[in-house]
Image (cartoon, rainbow, N blue to C red; front, side):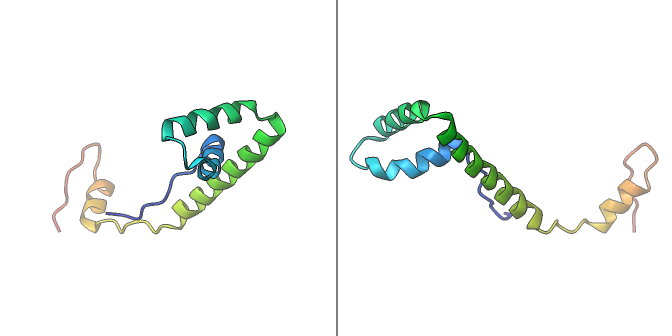
Length: 93
């Protein structure tokens, strides 16, 4: 398989990830309900801080994706596509 690059997290998921350790004694469903209530109560300035962190995570993700080298192309398949005229006919070689 290939390299696994973690997808970027949303502002809410970054917030929840940071808040969850504070509620270890709660069940997961209770944790997420409580975190969602706190997220909805945040003022727009605080939410914008988390949205900025999410944008940085997107940049991190795109940088990591672009750093992965592309697989080499099979020359026979490449020649098949390049030399075709409307149909995909494999060139033996």
